[in-house]
Length: 114
Image (cartoon, rainbow, N blue to C red; front, side, top):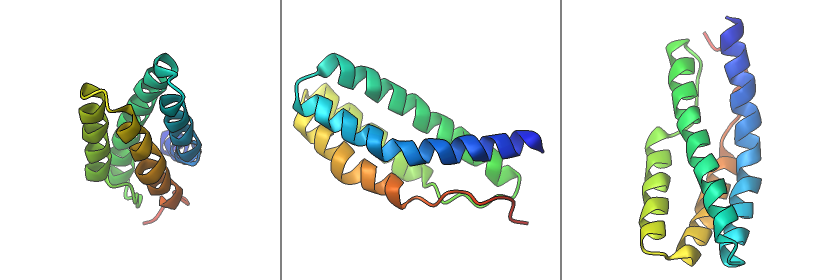
């Protein structure tokens, strides 16, 4: 059961940091700091994949998770499409106006709900 509590703690810590990271990515893209932006987008993508996995584990342990995996996949698809088109302003707007607010509104997990 300690593993579940560790996952909850890591999950909560990560979702709190995402909005600031999303704004950082948006600013890097707008300031033409593409290398830094792309590295940070890679980290973001890996992080949200971990959040998806963590959500599945928590739900299997009867813990309410408000994270919409479908919405996460939509964000990742939109990011990829924008990057493929080299439309960095679109990707910046996505991070600032959609991703950051999405994670700001996401509720932290308070503990075990049985």
